[in-house]
Structures are given as C-alpha cells and as structure tokens.
Length: 225
Image 1 (cartoon, helix red, strand yellow):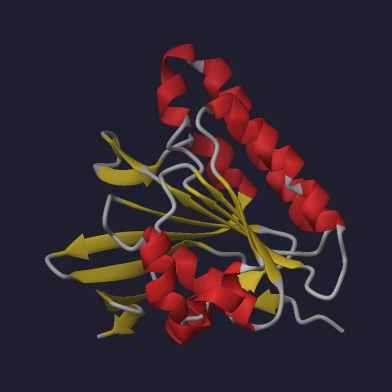
Image 2 (image 1 turned 180 degrees about the horizontal axis):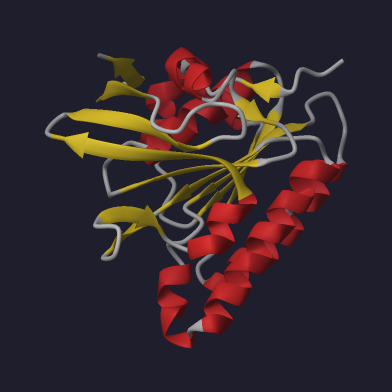
C-alpha cells in the first residue's frame, strides 16, 4: 500500500507539510528570486530518485546541471538516468509538454514516475500578461491538467511560482491569482533576509497557516538554523 505522502528530502519541510508532499495534489512554493525555490524542488527530485522512482521535471528557467549534481552527489550519474527533463521555450510549448509528460506517467515499469515538478509555473506566463484574461485562462488550463495527472497517476505535483506585490495587502503574493491559489492544496511562501531564508506555511488543509522554519542554502541543499 502506498503512503499518501512523499518526502521532500528535507525533514523540516516534510514536517511543515504534515509529512511530505501530498499525492493527488499540487503543492506550491513561491518567493522572490534566490529564495531557495529551485533548491527545495531539486532536493525533492533527488529524494524521489533515490527512493527508486523516476521524476518528470518541467523547467522553464534553465535547468542547472551543476546544482543537481551538488545535491545528488556521487549518485548523480545513476539518478540522472531516471530524470525526464522538459524545457519549454514559450507558454504554448509549456502546455504541450505538460500533455506530453503523460506518456511517461503511463509507463509503469521498474521505476514508475513518483513526482512531477514544474519550475517555475509562471516564468513563461509572465510573457503572456498583455493577453489579460486569455493568459489566465491558459495558465488555469495548464494547472488543471497537472492536477488531473496527479490524481490519475496517484503522484504529487510540486510547482514553484514567482511573486508580485499585492498593493492592497501590502505583501508579496504568488503570480497567477486564484488560478494557482485554489488549485494548490498546500502553499509555502519563502522569505529571505540576508543569508537566512524562512519557509512559511501559507495554506494547508489540516495545519495552521503561519507555521515556519528558517534555513540557509548550502552546497548540497539546505541547513535548518
């Protein structure tokens, strides 16, 4: 019997999420540049690969082979064989590659896909903002497709998101508005002050908003402080 949570590779993050990434759901991590979003994403990728599964990784910002190697360590070569990397160059291609990834999810061999990551869900969306509601409609469609894959194949989906300043609330919020907020079962906001980052629980079905832990980014991932 499968457990309903998948480890992120960080005990502190697993605890914040109530045991890890929830299957059949989208978990969102958002924050400003260099706040640690991609590092946390790659740590989850490596944890799932080390558990013997494959990972689908949709990267819209330029995949860092060096950072993956730092976190994977001496297992880099072996783990990379089970990492399926998609690198869309525009927003339309992002949607196509989400759909194409189902072919990999459908395969249920010796190393089935155990996680789908999109880093970031909104980098290419930014280029479409002049389309107004049409851009939001497309983004919503992408997220609904991801959620459908999570449910159909019983896996967690982890997305990272960029931020904008919400003038009314006077705080940074994740891009994509209600499209991303409603479709994400759990949301974590990353804050940074000098070298220290803070992961704050912004939304969760069973844990109180505002729980947090502080960390610094290290060569092989993060260290809680």
